[in-house]
Image (tube, rainbow, N blue to C red; front, side, top):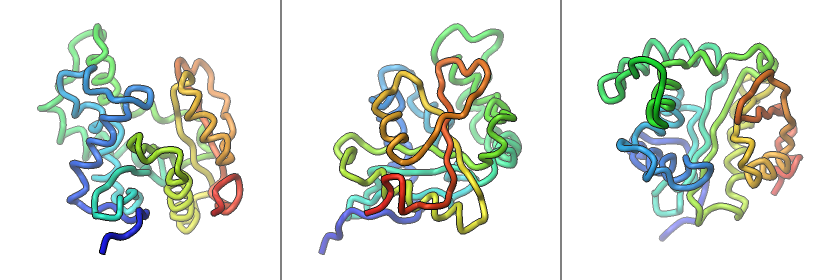
Length: 214
């Protein structure tokens, strides 16, 4: 009998679905397949390294039939994650995504340059929020409360580890995402010269509040 959709831990056989979800939501919430010759670039930046390095903090929304249709993933310690990204993740993807020679000239080169600069994730203004996360759901599963369920489960996992607070970055232009995070109790963190990004953070406590309750 098919189960109801539910949040569960990541399994290795979810990897393809994880990458697909990332690709289909990486263009400001929309499908990014038209932007990159190799669509695997976005997952290599924003999804797969987390599942590889911290699978215990990778959670998926299961559609009830075993298929992942959304995820929340991240790290409990951004500074440690950056170190492991460079040492243990980059060597796995350098052949597929060579480092650009010279200043980036295309969107693909811009994003590939980010891959080779994980230290961009370390900002002193974020030290009070040592964990960070990414959350994405396929469009048919959005605006149905599943994002809140994923976030609650992730915050609970961080809180159980003694992590006090978490942050995320988002494109400032993505106003629907900002409204979602505002409802979940995230607040803006001032960062000098943030470019097109806004940084948000919140405590890992009180996961039953801020719109996270059932």
